[in-house]
Image 1 (cartoon, rainbow, N blue to C red):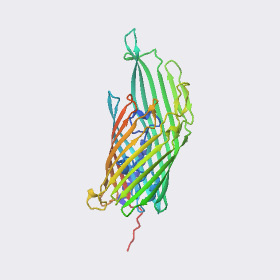
Image 2: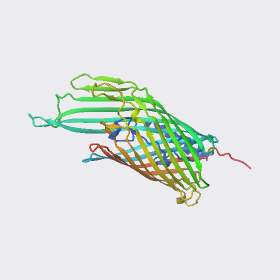
Image 3: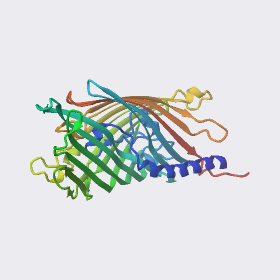
Image 4: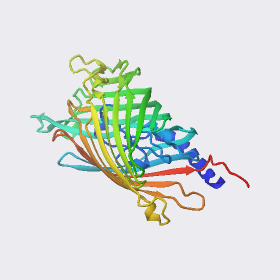
Length: 439
């Protein structure tokens, strides 16, 4: 017991050291992270990543499910659960004629769960909210220099970095049998940094007489986030249980400002500030889950985010004024189905206790890309929950999942993205609250 706790304390210390470093990195190379607040994280944990993030109707005493805080009410009375996960990703980006691969490694989450009292659970942790990371160049043919015969091109270079990070604390309570409610309160912080430079080239050299443009966009974001959840169990018989869940996120304006620095070769630099530049959306979701005989678990979720009502800073094409504007976002809907099968949780045979999982997802875009709808996402996942069995701990699990994600653009001129991800999460389930008796 003491050795096991020493291991967990070491992991908690390592997590505390990792968090500051994680806040300076990102988990994406997507050019689409240039728009909005970046690429949104699915905020799922190791146990449900293999089910494409299914979670609104799921609850169990040995898992941390932050997607629906009502699930915390089912926390096991004897244990403290600590969960940490990371992913390795290979992304392929294609414009139809060229293809580029990029690799990323990221910390996905660190969280914990324990029971305060009967039917009352508490969870806290860290998860990314969004990621920004890209660096690409485009060239556009402008004309021909009739004196030298050189081709004149306009080369645009785009670079971005940053993202928003999330610390949360949540509570789940079962006020009466089969009905649970819960809430997560989060602190969000982060920044984004975008640059755009446009340079006119005459042949292979920059045109010294051209009026080249450079813009730098900056913003520091700090705000809060509140998410509510409910779950209701409907026992059908001794072997069948149906759970219905619902979640809601409270949207609000973010009072942080954004700035843009504009510099051209033939003029001085100018800086504009956009006040009250950001907004979080109202959101809601529903999920249903069916469990059979502690072996099968099958469910579906639908989650809707009202991004179209939110503002984002942009330069007005007509007035060149930098200000918060609507019209840059789209309402986003994500649908998920997933299933889990365990042959026999009480078996002595190891493979009989392995959790086998599969899932699929589909989501619409939340951003517009140069006035057109962003890419739709299609995903398929599969994985395992591998029990850890040794003399110290036989309740912990290593979750391993594989994900394929396809981002399909709405126009042929946009980039198509394909991702292969390996997700690894470790759930430490410690018997901290067991009362020992001496005869």
